[in-house]
Amino acid sequence: MESKLIIIRGNSGSGKTTTAKSLQSHLGHGTLLVSQDVVRREMLKVHDRDGNLSIDLIRQIAEYGKGKCEFVIVEGILYKDRYGEMLKNLIHFYNQKTYSYYFDLSFEETVIRHNSSPKKMEFGEESLRAWWNPNDYLGVDGETILTNDMSQNDVLKQILNQLGK
Image (cartoon, rainbow, N blue to C red; front, side, top):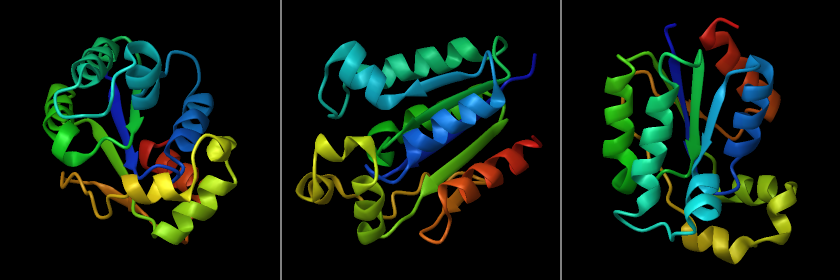
């Protein structure tokens, strides 16, 4: 089986997790979703710092999916400075069969999207501002930039279209 890696990145509250879960649902059984928040906060309970244990575990889980799953989705904030080398290694591991997406939204749009999500009670605008890291492009060939004017449905349609689904 030839597996495809899908990377979905962006600031907190931009719609990454919603997009990844919708994509997994649409792509069906055997689609592996590796969520940074699940690995880092739930499985390992570590802070998002340089060299944290989640970096290697995200890589290992994503590598596990190659040859076993048609699609492997890695999603999260995944700051370039902290996770970029690991992500570029995964792209190489998947023989460039990768689709990379970055939510490049304004801070204002991010707040609007966050306030319409179930996580709005977990943290607010002050935390979003503290975590804000604009223009954090991975800088890999074919990286698709997702913008303010794209609805969640538009994003899903674009990704599925690029996957040929």
